[in-house]
Amino acid sequence: MKRNIVIATLTAAALATGGTVAAFAAGHDDATATQRQANTSVRSAAEAIAATLRHTPGTALSAGLDDDGADAWEVTVVKGDGTEYDVRVAPDSGKVLGAQRDTDDDKDAEDRAELAAVKGAHTDAREAALAAAAKGTVTEVGLDDDNGTVAWSVDTAKDGKHSEWKVALDSGKVTQDRDDDGDKA
Image (cartoon, rainbow, N blue to C red; front, side, top):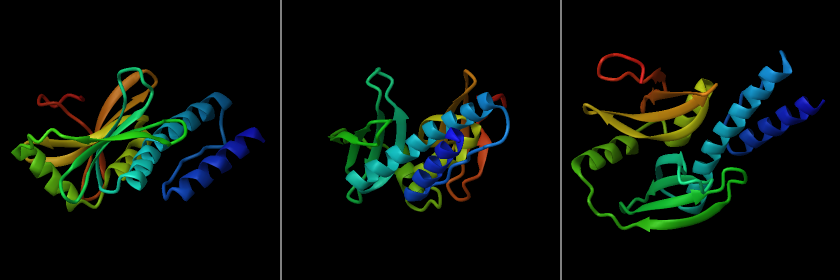
């Protein structure tokens, strides 16, 4: 019964934010608990981006769990005029904790190319996080320019293992990231 309530709650929350969520009611309770935990965390990444864009409209360029122990998502947004904002979002509630304009004006050619690529993209940062959700708990999503090809780079954690994924800007297709030697990153 409790599992059905959790599944219904997750599904309703995902639909309310325009997202999707996978919930598995069959199988061993430990396995379904792990699946729910991963989906709840990934959904939080997507919700952090959605909350940020409601607070600070623009284009999300990245989102990641704060690594300084402050327990918050940091989302970078660029507005139409090119100004960037760093927004902090509580991972449990989706509440915006604060927003600060990024005054770093050293936009290089790579930054401009990434911004141009994402403006014409069919897949945004939130959709990239949701697409990679099947691979594990999303801990970070951002743009990556690899030899002139811009894609979303998504870091996940699953069973203590960290993996990196590329999500195509045009199709949303998820592939495992490979280093220069062809090994999994």
